[in-house]
Amino acid sequence: MLLEGLKLHPSQSATAPEMIAATASWAMYGAVKEWTQTPDRSVSEEIANTVMTLVSPILQLAQEHPAQSLA
Image (cartoon, rainbow, N blue to C red; front, side, top):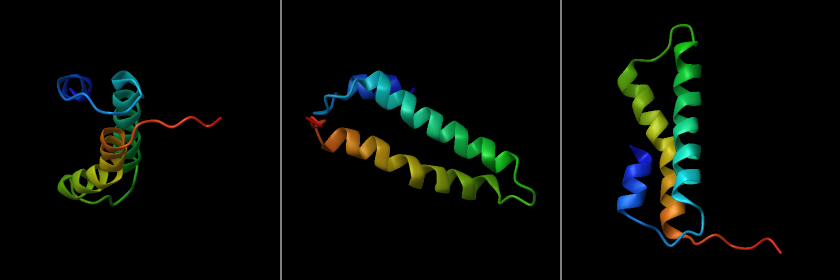
């Protein structure tokens, strides 16, 4: 779903949409996996907001800033 959206809305980033989608999706997976293993965890609505807060910068930065060379 992320990759489809990134391809429908190309960015100025030199980073491939596949890389951006993979990074964001694994970040979501990792956060939710950690949440499911937490005793007395918060309700799902709260973790959804937390995950969006954590992942949004990945997607936003990919849309706003072209990749820069480290050379």
